[in-house]
Amino acid sequence: MCISVGVGIYYAVVDKLKNNDQETKEPNTSTENYLMGGRSMHFVPVALSLLTTFISGKTLLGLPGEIFDRGMVFLVYFFMSIPSFIISCVFFVPIFYHLGVTSIYEYLEMRFHSVLIRKICAAVFVLNTLVYMGGVVYGPAVAINSVTVMPTHWAIILVEPLAPCTQQ
Image (tube, rainbow, N blue to C red; front, side, top):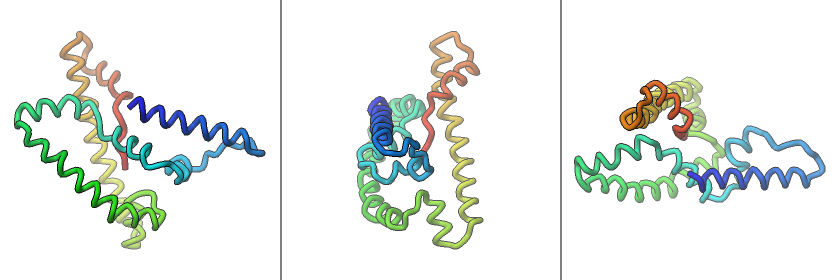
């Protein structure tokens, strides 16, 4: 996570210095630059950013227990992730990149010509993320509660800002 934060700080400083060198002192704050990094970032920082969104307290606390309970069968998940990432990179990412879409919801609207489908899928994602984040925050809070005298509700307040946001 420190590497990912460091990459973000590096690009913020580089962008700030670049803006200071330009004739206009106006900062570059467009939504496109904020959400997509100006479409000029190398794939390594983007990949690290995506990786940090999948690692949470739930993963760190649950994975050892899962492996202890079920054995090394869980490695199948990790080994099958490699072909799935390759398939995604070869078939899906180029389509989205050439269309210039920023999310799967924008693609669904373009594909089916329906704003309603886009909104329904986005709403389902938001609902899923809210339920998921509840588990991500509650798991480490219970762990903190069991090793300290801190009440669970205070541990939730402590853990909540540290929980990573999931990617869209």
